[in-house]
Amino acid sequence: MTGINRKSLTSWSARQAVGILAVDNIKLSAFGLDLLKRKEDGLISYDQAREEIRLRAKALAAKG
Image 1 (cartoon, rainbow, N blue to C red):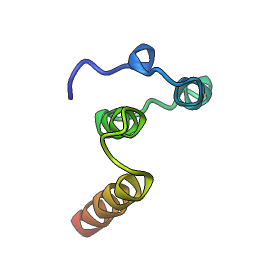
Image 2: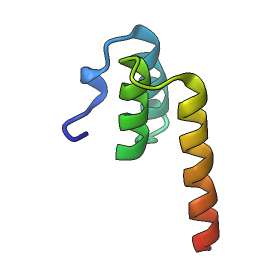
Image 3: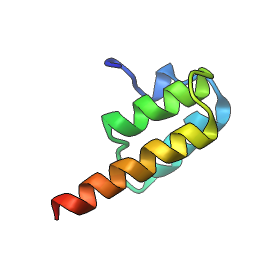
């Protein structure tokens, strides 16, 4: 998904989470925003989102 930003998020909690990170100058990656938006839109479950994060972390760790 392209063109996703904090303002495209519809739930208060999602916007707040991204906003809290922004206070510390932490920017959510495209992967993170896409995952958050798909979860928020009901396209994936919490468990599916968690599994995607786990697999991505495993792949990044394998790269070294």
